[in-house]
Each structure stands twice: as structure tokens, then as C-alpha cells.
Length: 320
Image 1: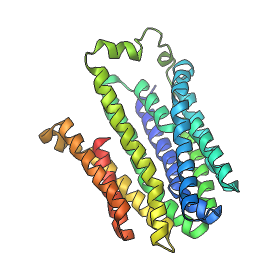
Image 2: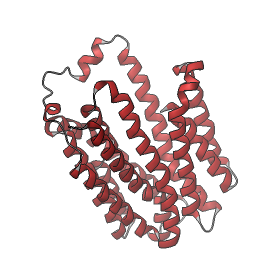
Image 3: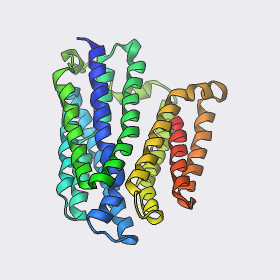
């Protein structure tokens, strides 16, 4: 089995999948307002929050289940499941007629997708141990690039063709991501025979202090991810207040710059940590994330919001 060929196919598949997701989902607030007729104000805020959180909640609940099934039946089937689930649920938003239907599909999307975790698990299992770190970095670059380009193209397409077609296009992109996984990616049968390995809890218990370090890491990462997920939709609501036209294009530009800044930070942060250390670098970057998020709420012009989005992506990339 050629692990490099696997990695190349997974890079393309993950880039295409994340492109499909980010092609459409940053614009949920605009879709609710312009296509589903939700009035600006409290109603739009509540429906936006509900549609944004439904996917994350379902993903958090379903991920451990899919992880167990992946250990039992293989990582490749789980990756295909996540892409098929995402393609169907994203594409079906084209037919949505009211906010309730949107939330149902968002919940199903979260419960059935999760392409990044599935691809990461497959790469980690099939790559030689000495190259795992590098290979996971390659996958991360696909996620970052897809997340940076998708919103820019999706925003322009939304202004030109309407957001319903954008969601349909996102579903098509996710279906295209399935092709290299089916035709090229191979999973070694030996990877599935994991009965002799120590459980995750056993490994943690063998390393003194690792449990506390993981608790802090998971807590901080969870808080930053929660804040970024919330502000993603709130930023669009803010742009709807400031702009009468071109909201999709401007918000797409902001998300694209944020993705590029985040990927650049993920690559270049090692120079900073060499001088400050990991803990101090993470603490400073987390504080700057807070400043950037606060700036999103008080920025009086759309251009300042776009700049704050880029800075938030830059500092979040260092922390994450």
C-alpha cells in the first residue's frame, strides 16, 4: 500500500469537502433573512443561533459513536459516511422552505458528517510513525485552504446566483470529494486489528500530569472554538446591519482572509514559540483573540470588521 498516494488523495478529498462546507454555511444568516423571510432583529438572531448550534451539538454527540464504529469497521467507511452525509444534508438545504426545516437539516448534517476527524484518523493509522506529524500537517493545510477559498467563492456566487444554488453547489462539491476516496484510498486490514493496543484512558493514566494538561487543553480549545463558531454568524448579522448590498461577497472575503491568516499562523508559529515557549505563546495569542472578537462587535465600518476577522483567524491559528 502506497501511503503517499493515500495522502495525496485524502488531501484533495478533504480540500474539496471543506470547500463545499465553507462554500455555503458562513451565509446562514443571509439565507434566513433573504430566502426564508426571517425579519431582522431578535427573530433573526435566535434562528441564526439555533441553526448554527444544531450542527455542533449533533456533531459533539455523534462523534464518539462514529469513533467506536471506525475502530470496529475501519476508518475509510467512516470517511465515506461523513462525506455522503454532508453532501446530502447540504444539498437538501436548496429545498428548505422555513427555518425549522433548516435546523433539522443542520442537526442531521452534524450527526452524519465530520470529515476532518475521519480523514485525520485514517491518515494517522496508515502513515509510517516517523511521518505522521508531517502527514497530519498536510491534511491541516487542505482544511485551511478549503476553508479560506470556499467563503470567497461562495460569497461571490451567492450575490450572482442566490444562496439556494450555493447550498446545492456545496453538496455537489462534497459528492466530488467522495471520488478519490473510493477510487484511490486504501486501508490496511491490519489497522483494524486493534485489540492488543492500550486504551486511550490507559495511556493517559501511564503519564503523570497528562490528564490535567489535557483538561486545560480541551477546555481552552473548546472555548475558542465555541467563540469562533458563534461569532461566524454574528459577524454576518452585523454586516447585514451595515450594508444594503454585497453582504455575501464582503462576508466571504472576511472568512477567506481569516482562513488564510489562520493557516499562515499554524505554519509560522514555531518561530514565536522558540522564543516565548508554548505556554506563553498560547496565553498571549488567546488574549489577542479576545481583543479581535471584541473589535468585531464595536467596529463601525465593514472594512474594520473584515480586518478584525483576519486578525481573529491569525491569533486563533496560533492557539489552535
